[in-house]
Amino acid sequence: MAVCHVCGKKTAHGNRVAHSATTTKRTWKPNLQRVKAVLPDGTTKKIYVCAKCLKAGKVKKAVR
Image 1 (cartoon, one colour):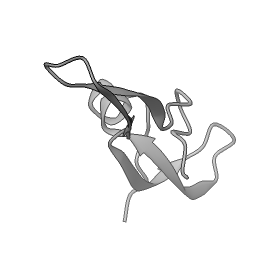
Image 2 (cartoon, one colour):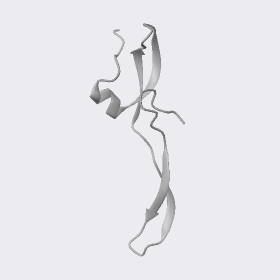
Image 3 (cartoon, rainbow, N blue to C red):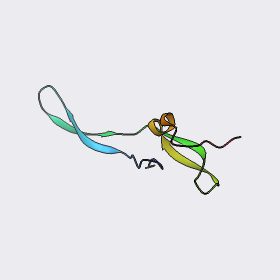
Image 4 (spheres, rainbow, N blue to C red):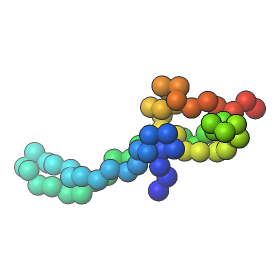
């Protein structure tokens, strides 16, 4: 599975808890987007970035 290149966010695992307190396994997946970004060394590369990091401006997108 893909991981956010900026913050390292990835799939989390836990339990789905019903009203009767029965539990079953479930997963939470981050909202990952594949973005063409400019890396710190100046090169452009397609990387996976979560939507939270994109909104915060932590990634500089490459110009088309």
